Amino acid sequence: MAPLHRLPVLAAVALLASCAGQPAGVTPAPTPEATVGQFLAAVNANDLDRMAALFGDEHGRTRWGTPQAKQERLTIMQRLLRADSSRFVGSEPDSTGVTTRRLVHYELIGVDRRVEVPFVVARQRAGGGWLVYAIGLASLMPNPNGRSGP
Image (cartoon, rainbow, N blue to C red):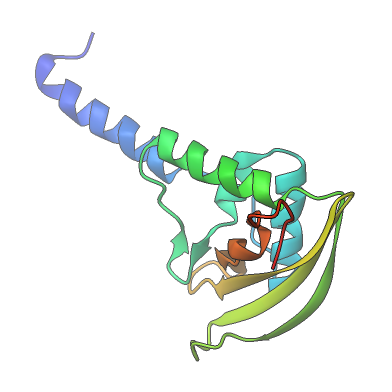
């Protein structure tokens, strides 16, 4: 058993390890389009850990706070983004002028919908690859008349 003065240190190390962890073997793709494709594949596979590992900005992966907050946010994204299929539509520089970001458009296709969704992706400064930074989920929100999209 560890002496009492070591318990806070061990607890802190365990907490840091749980916050900073990422699924083994998850490497962001070398192109913005491929990163969004990987993210959507994780959405359809119900792989929230992989979704989390592909979400972040130039500084690295997103810190989600508590495991419950991470679960809730990713589950909402996953439910909105799930589709029977998807296809890359196009890519352009991010409208904010940030040179390390790109705006990538994917069309999500389902039985009852076909909607184009914008994704902002960010190139990591360290480690290379791209991460999903933001998703235009508004286009996926139900309208008052019961239809998805604008």
